[in-house]
Image (cartoon, rainbow, N blue to C red):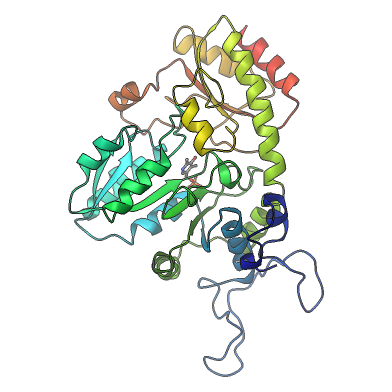
Length: 386
Ligand SMILES: *Cc1c(COP(=O)(O)O)cnc(C)c1O
């Protein structure tokens, strides 16, 4: 089904059908893995629309159409990783341009901006995006992009996407939202005014911890054309097999997200009442500082929880070593529950003074609540916390 024909359909129907129709020659119901690097031409320049697989591949086309539809966007482009997506998008800028970025951004995004792209004379300001007036003051004539991530990682701060994208638009600054934590199911940044949405598809969108990938989605034809040119010119494309696997993962996104959330609410409530837990960060809890904003701009609260244990590294390490169902590993968004220590693991590349400012202390633990039985997850945490 062409993604442009899926506009009025429900999310689950789009997840299963958008961009996908039986293969015309054999009737294969699943889009084949077109494992080919090149395509035969009838006469020089006369081809089926596919000529070389870096430029386009039918498996990737189907996947891109499906994601575009889920995010309420016209266009999607897939890449070999979330960071390859970000890097390609930043190639639309030129030397001397300025980018404003959330200070609590994904560690790898910070590293790419601060350690790699800054060497090409792109200028970055990392700041708290909670106050749109402060962001407005930071915008200068050279500011070309506003990079938003909400909720943030690992402290799950929520930024007002509608207010920030409106401000960006009024100043002709391109707004980008990293929607990895909520997935297309719980948050629709394009509907909230964003110019571009990106995902690390590695997380909830694929959902099975077996693919690394990324995607960008936009409604803007000019941005799409620039990014499409760069996708081919820079070349960080996903392999056909990975495109197939992500499409399979997307078919259950709505079912998985509902269960992630149901389990996360149960786990967050359990942790909130536990005497050895100092504080729980989950947007779905009324105690979350931006709970009202979360309720307004998201249709759910997702499956990510961060919490502070009473004590320090010793106490946190004990929990991380004792879990049996939760796996101690980086990453998130898979069907299996994961647990990790941001200061030592995912956010080690964030300088210690920034970690301190952001609340990434040694007693902070982050969990990605999977879709196992909630009672088993709670029992596991209970024995590990002791
Ligand atoms: C993992 C992640 C990324 C980077 O994606 P990769 O697929 O690992 O390259 C970007 N943003 C967020 C929020 C992430 O969690």
